[in-house]
Image 1 (tube, helix red, strand yellow):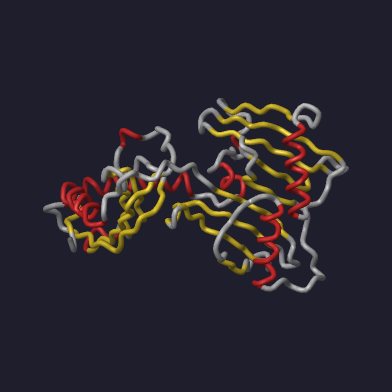
Image 2 (cartoon, one colour):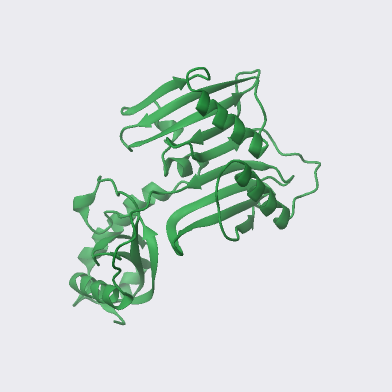
Length: 308
């Protein structure tokens, strides 16, 4: 299949889905990254459906011990006291434990967040980097990030990508997650290293994965499924959509192309053929890329994305 026609009706539907997806993924804040795997954004605390329970070292020693170990592993400052809380967000069906290091002014100087299994979701320190130290190189930043993650029990594999942070003068070091040789779409571990070589923050996004299908549909079968789906949507219209590529990846099912699934939990990530299509003609003025997820087990459409 080289191209299919683009329907104006479907354009409205899929761009509407893209808005919903964009709202869910637009923020790059540390707490938002944590929220994706079990934490809630602090600005939701106090809203209906969000319950906050105080945690204390004597009643939750494992949480505080875990937080102390992560703090030390990452080289974070130690407060004169610590405070903890458990946040349960009923609306998003997520929860996390958080421990803050607090200074003499009762202000947090560092915090760590963990999911229910004790896995580190996020950590950040709130003091400032040294302005006198020699700037860390790309290699030393990657080594610092790797040591900190290993010491705090966070497992990563492969070579990281290291990008200079022009705003802070430091480095962003990140590892994409793979499982069974396939990328887990959207999952990564990211470490921000200050210009003096110390770790300033860690954020880890890691979704649950469904079992690998007992039998996988091959690429040609998936392509046929995609072709039939796009023909159903776009046949007989002015614009065309040309395939840009198709790969197996772990994806989170979504309601981008099925409004009946709006508000439903996506469930664990599933192995899927990810097909990308670039519109041409009038359609390209409003949509630059369409992505479809075809379940690798049963060949059904389980979501996708649209880039405007």
